[in-house]
Image 1: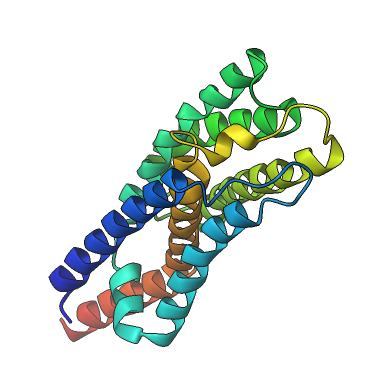
Image 2: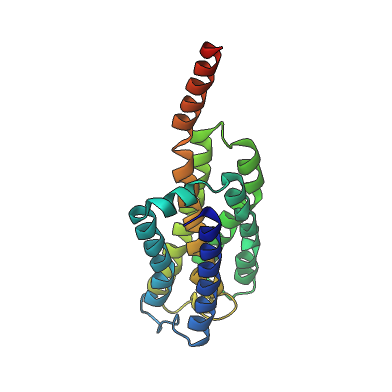
Length: 212
């Protein structure tokens, strides 16, 4: 399969995934009874990541396509996460619990606000800094999911993350969170190849000079 075909296939799968997440929300499949762990939300987050990981590991052609994507573009997509200020606003209006909304909101704001700098300044010369930035992005998302799952259990009589299981907020855990986690995984995998690729380019350049 060519790179163009993989691009079309990936775009189609992402569109279908988004539609499926909307359908799951409309059918209330993500809602969880009070005091129980949000298994629907956790499955919505983990299933796409598991599918992507298996496909990436089992298909060399798909892996080559993924690693050929522009890391700057993938990193810039995280700029959308500055919309995490919505969580802070919803906390201020007493809709979401602070245990979840504040770390999730401010973490997303920090990642979204620095995405342009990470894309423009760290690629491809600062491998460690680039990977560290993406690991912070992963930590932000994992913390948000963990605190969202724990808040209802730790404080069952207080505010819960129930609004996150209904539209339009349900699109965030059902689609946005796993998508951004996959983008982080891809970028980290790409960055781990940079030293080897740079060494290969230097060796090739030295060989070309020697031939002259």
